[in-house]
Image 1: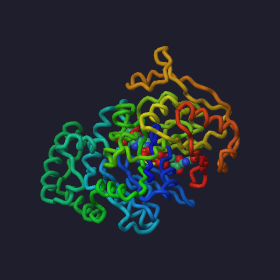
Image 2: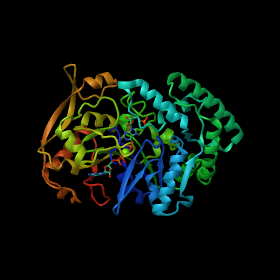
Image 3: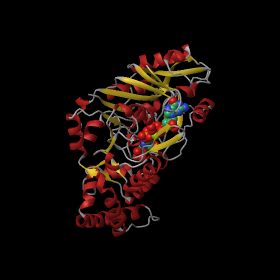
Image 4: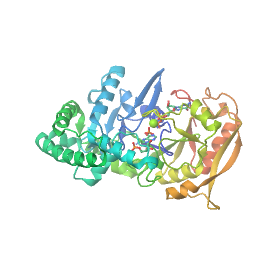
Length: 426
Ligand code: GDP
Ligand code: IMO
Ligand code: MG
């Protein structure tokens, strides 16, 4: 039985979408289990680009079932737009999509609330995607204001709850921001009733479905969103997302026990990127950083923001690989480094004059961390046509070996371009 997880080991955008797409043919079901439309997973196939946000990447494969599981926060408008686009471009979905009735719903007031909160933080803004993710998870944890997909099918209770919630949100947001325009609960109720009706054929108990699928020996693929360093508990708090985006989130986000997972694949870029605020020890503010941004097209899939770029950080990735129990690593975008004379890998931090390979728990410590680099020769050759390890220059192989050694797991996939074919399987 094959139950595989694909987890980002950095700050997101590691090219998890490409790996999930590559592994989908070996699986029957692909599951998203945390986050929402803050994710942007790119899949390129036969010259077509798909940017998946809420729907599992597996929906593109006609043999595969796609599950939006319990731990997600779902903006129904965004989900239905994405679904319409997929149906238009790649054919009907029919009974292949399942949406959890336990997943929480993102409402317009979540986006409004987030905008007000982020504005008030000024220089300390988290730099969120503004999709109402954190504010929806906050209402879930707070319980009083959380609304789940299943609640959309109890209209009379829903109408009353929305009136209570919207009154509360309007009061707070008007007090905090004089420009805030109050929301109308009944208008939201009408809008969401329409979404509920359209989603109904897909809504059900995904936990029961997945546990039955396990019993039947079905092959399941978990598609992690964001990256381990953005995990709410284990990441660079508060500059994180509001879900467990490391391997720790699979069990609570899907209901599938962790011991069922047979393979944990950690996805890393051959360098590091980060979008939004928060410390980033290996960040490059020079022309090399700009070169990586240009060659790697490092602009956000969701928001279009330029991504911050830097050298590969083995201290951070060793931490996240251990945290998520990674068995194998996929190294992505290696081709982006091809034109550089020398490459640096951060093998330790120096914090207050002390050298360490431990990843600090507090952002203030991480902000002080000075990277200790190991310098390696570059290869200055186009590697985008490599299909086996021997096709790669010795310098590129040595770069990969160093990463594997420092992170502490074998590399089994190397990606040398966005296309499915541009992959070296080891
Ligand atoms: P995800 O959120 O982890 O799925 O990653 P994103 O889709 O946000 O960002 C990864 C970007 O890198 C996408 O534009 C991919 O098409 C692209 N990509 C994936 N693998 C490679 C690769 O090996 N080389 C290059 N140059 N681009 C890649
Ligand atoms: P994928 O799945 C990269 C970042 C945001 C911000 C922080 C909190 O494509 O890898 P949020 O909107 O979640 O409250 O924002 O997390 N972030 C991501 N960065 N890739 C993502 O998803 C991200 N999802 C959220 O930029 O710094
Ligand atoms: Mg992305």
